[in-house]
Image 1 (cartoon, rainbow, N blue to C red):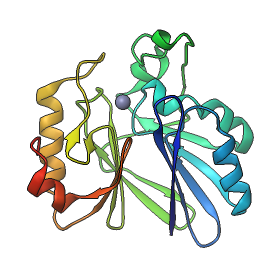
Image 2 (image 1 turned 90 degrees about the vertical axis):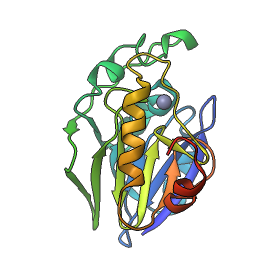
Image 3 (image 1 turned 90 degrees about the horizontal axis):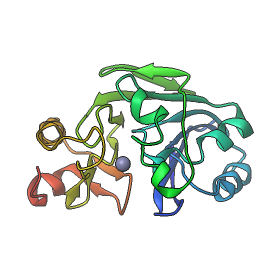
Length: 202
Ligand SMILES: [Zn+2]
């Protein structure tokens, strides 16, 4: 399994490309100009079959339509995130001047597994940053979206955000057994153990 992080879009949101040995790939979140992503995929001869969304904010979904059109990927999102994904006011795209709405092909819930090639992504429901935010777990890796950052956590002052709810989700992550590498929606990667020891919100 190979992981590539690309900072994309107006605020450099992390877009992750996770591929198996056969080249089948999942894309986690994608914003902005998709050309760096297309370049990486073609350079590595990958076949992206799924876009896995951690949540529906504009800076995580801005390139979904272009990527879907290019590869015919299936778009997967949390079942409670529909309002954020489809309402430009709720996903904050309207404030940037371009209304964005994404309709997923498949909704997932806590405990579901999304199989992409030889890879199995486990869905963890972690609301709070938005009402339907998810983390995806695979092997000893967590893709945490905007729920958990290195030394911090996602804001909860945007539509559908809730402070006490994200604290519960962070506790859920804290209490996972063992250690994980954490790839966040923004900023550098970290580990769960580092965050357990040093992140004030955990
Ligand atoms: Zn967000």
